[in-house]
Amino acid sequence: MSLRSPLNRVLGLGSAKSGTDHFWGQRVSGIALVLLGLWFAVSLVQMPGFSHAETLAFIAMPLNSVLLLMLSVTVAYHSYLGVQVVIEDYVHGHGLKLFSLIVSRFVHSLLAVAAIYAILTIGLGA
Image (cartoon, rainbow, N blue to C red):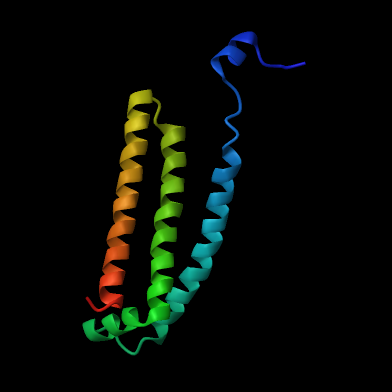
């Protein structure tokens, strides 16, 4: 016996079964951000100075480049998930909601690609 009305069954209304993926994505990326953020904070404290040359040398180290790439991508992903929830909860017009979600995804992707490009450019010495 189903508690859904016949109209809801025809329209396909009901559980989208995608909330768990979003929930776990936020939690796992949050844990990754804690660990990567701690690494980044400790690395900044241990840097002898913050001159341009020292910063480039720091980013050029292979381990630091990889961890910075992971940090940048994780920040963009976690931020996108959070902004998506805010848009879905507080933007009520269907067209505006869809437009906002598309712009959010585009901006977060653009920022992640820019960060990846900058880190790889410095890391590979191009």
